[in-house]
Image (cartoon, rainbow, N blue to C red; front, side):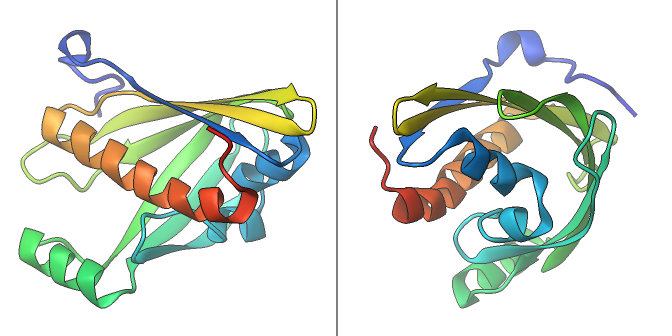
Length: 167
């Protein structure tokens, strides 16, 4: 398993910032609880089913990512990907209500060795709002980095609707 993308130097991390009408506690729970995670994780047309979430430094995150809308199912079939994929990760940084990092094992990219990628999340209270800054670190293949960023942007629309994205 490769611990960092070999061509990470030529790919920039993708940074996504959202400010929501929510407390840091509310947003934190979306990343660290079964109900919270399942309520939004996955691009439009997908859902997640959490099997284990040990929200602590080094804690396990295990879930299935499941295509459940006709368009998503068709897209996965067209790409030759399964409709459900078991996903494994761990909490590699953990400062409650301030910062967390999820390190995911990427074991589903055709023709690539298994590797890890990291998502960093920082929470900044701003009065009655919270700014959430998410850094998506690159995959081995720039195309998968692009698809990861697109998918994450899609899933954020679920939070945008729930909390009223303030920009």
